Length: 100
Image 1 (cartoon, rainbow, N blue to C red):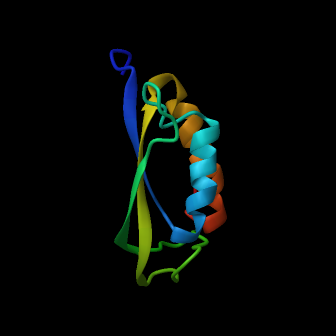
Image 2 (image 1 turned 135 degrees about the horizontal axis):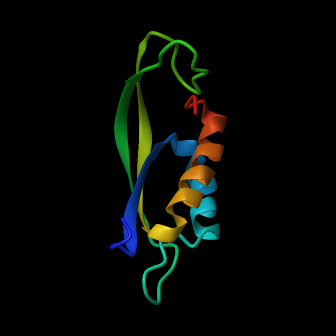
């Protein structure tokens, strides 16, 4: 990955965590493109999953299929900040019970 200066981060989140995630990404300067910052795209999608044993789900029940509206968020990230961005996303995602 050393040949690339940027990559795309894509994450699916409960709609109610939108602003919290946007702040985290902005604080890390993820989404900085040229003379613009805070650049990202997001769209409402239909998510579907089954929570497995050992997880504490934010929504849904263990061993049951769940379907909810959620957001898909995409942003450009400098490669040197990817590990930090992923770590911060995992911290906030632990609030909604991803099991990380």
